[in-house]
Length: 260
Ligand code: IPE
Ligand code: IPE
Ligand code: MG
Image (cartoon, rainbow, N blue to C red; front, top):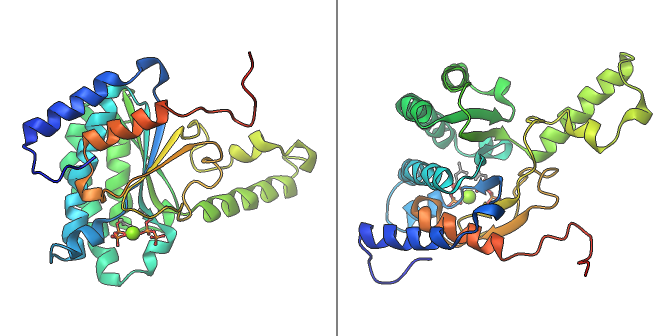
């Protein structure tokens, strides 16, 4: 949704509002999940460090949260750090952790005032102490909020999530708390990181790649997938509303057939 001519901030905001006005409020996705990709390439083409791309990505998160609130999306799950991302150079991983801690400190009040509830999904126990402390603080602060749930996927991997679920199910069986024939899809889903959240209706991936990169392998079974070349630091309200517009034009059949 970029144009070649440089648009002013006001023009872009007007276009975003215009697209938002076309959305059907009765068919909003309840839960939108986003693979926020392309920070590094955004920076590299500008001759900047990858870290600068991650810094700019923070602004995109702010815009996306605002857009989600404006159109009544209930849950936003953002893929911020995958279990595989720890293979990156230590310098980048440490910079990302510092950025996260800083963002949590700076944004805490704003999240609280805007009715956002922060949650996390992932192997949080394996994250550095200072990250866990910063997360715990904002989770506790925003616990009572209900207008939008921001679920941060941190140190998250879909295979890891399913492996943990399998291990904990096996423990329950071994302890005699569960019998193998009681295990069905609902039982397994209760052992995932965020069992109370509904599955995402819409998955957006920025940055041009068309893959899942180990994101929400179970939960995305019937999500609508939307890929855009826009790199995450450039992602704005217009792009978010355009993704929802595309979602609303889809026909979700869940394996069934149209009747009548
Ligand atoms: C996404 O941007 C942010 C994280 C994975 C933390 P990338 O850092 O993957 O950016 P590209 O894909 O290299 O451009
Ligand atoms: C996926 O992006 C992870 C996040 C956005 C946090 P990656 O950049 O890590 O994915 P690949 O390596 O392109 O598959
Ligand atoms: Mg990437």
